[in-house]
Length: 211
Image (cartoon, rainbow, N blue to C red; front, side, top):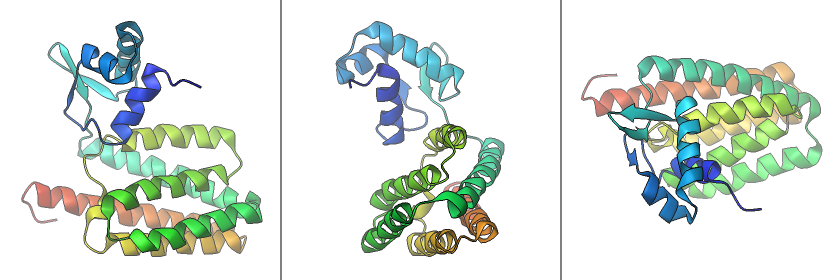
């Protein structure tokens, strides 16, 4: 099935082809994706209403998140993902749990490559969402993770964060495997909290401040 302009632009932002602050030009997007300008224009308007794009004079640029928006996003993400982990502990099939475990095992072989690990991290969380067996929750988490694409860097770039994140993933999967709903939710909340704290430190260092 051919992807529409909206999906193509969104995936390009998520893949880092367009970063926060980058200007998007309708004609260039149409040429890149091999589509006409009308669907590109409509897609850009839709992305603007979803706060994925922002106005900069007459141009549209990829939006960025300020400190308050970042904090709000992580609060919502922690609660929704904790619910997903809780439901996965209750509903996940043995095959789904094995897939999550295999993802962790593979990711440990590439934990020193932040970009590769970042993509793997997205796949792991997406698989965890699906294991909740709640389509409405999955839809909401898709929206949250779409906004995560507006973060210029990955917290996995911090020294030692990759290995710690995988240990946290393991704790989540262990709880799901044991059917421990509360333990899975707590492990997931702790994981998101650690990621948020790491991101705050990275942002402080970028600004030349002490975290």
